[in-house]
Image (cartoon, rainbow, N blue to C red; front, side, top):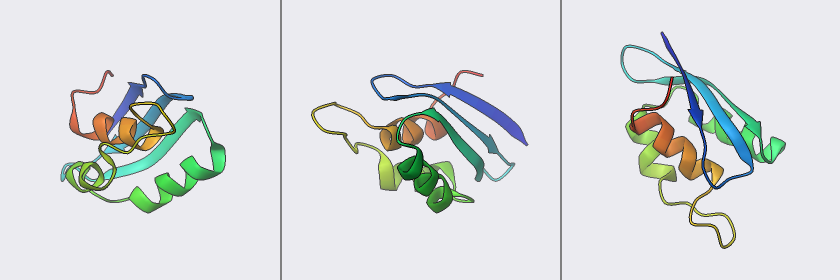
Length: 84
């Protein structure tokens, strides 16, 4: 399994960490900062999904007047070249 650390942009959460297996399934999602309860729920709901499945559900989700959200940043992290 590959461990990925993604530095977020434009959100209260500062960093997202997760593992990716050989089938691009995402495991052990955790957020540093942000709305603790909501982000734990997102992590549970996305556990075991592929990066593509997560992106299909969460990409483009916004928070208030921001052009992004923690969920949107997770979608970007699992589909783009995340900083390691």
